Length: 383
Picture 1 (cartoon, one colour):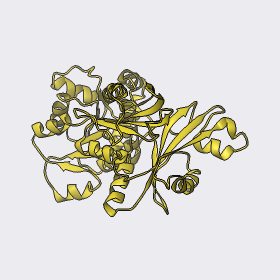
Picture 2 (cartoon, helix red, strand yellow):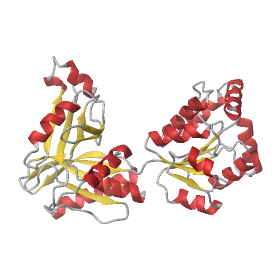
Picture 3 (tube, one colour):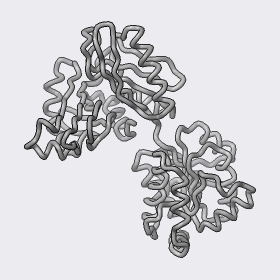
Picture 4 (cartoon, one colour):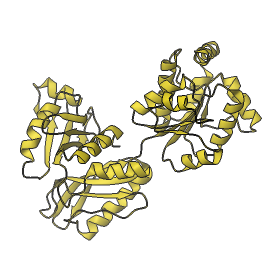
């Protein structure tokens, strides 16, 4: 998944017409610090965003990258732990195991006839649609160059570069990319062509998670701030359009003041939507929960003691075992301050988005000390 900060940084550079270089981890064998799809952006004079290592190789890649790509062609760098026995800095930078290998593709952006990976990702993120990109990083076929790329957005047509692949390979890649869009996970693939073999990275381009925050109190601000810092979309659902609310949540993408059906429509158009209910008002929490339960949300965190959440669900005549609802919201990390609770909530939501079974969270909640949970919720509610 391409990070939002990198996509936004590339947009700024394109607007200003400043040339830049993109380094992408395309293949990892063994263990490594970053996974395939990790990127960083460099101009001629500075690092801009992202990373492909633990931090100490960015300068080296920047210096070599501009020189090695001076003819406009992408270049593949290979970092092999087996050949750097005495170079602990390189091994540490990539988090390489004793047999780890990382391959990094460097390419200049803005060359006519080629697909710009970050511009494509930007389009997907703006439309809040999934997509997939295929980038060739090894080729023994003289007709297919390293760096050749195809892309497709969900529901769209296959995008090709000027030097298109032959029909058989194109169909195989197209099918694999549609599978990646469906699963939301990328993969490395090997394809046999009429003239050789190619290896490619197929990336899943996923819009950032979208947090619907039902609550505008001061303790909701750290939740919005942390989620936004992680690159998530943040939509604050407010009961009225107070200027003070918009000012307090200036970091949010949107402060939404609308009827329930409007909020439900926004959730329906979101790829990975989650919500936190923290109005600190019983009636408003019940109204929010009633709305959210009828949507496709992946996670619904409710602030307050477990007994309060169970009462809300009973009054709404909803099964108490709805696996999406977690109350009290947040991992049990001893959180007391609003900032600590924000960390616990965002961390829990991230675990759900990463595929952690909700049953595991419920088991954790069942064994959590009741007194501690109530005290944490009370501290947050009164600050």
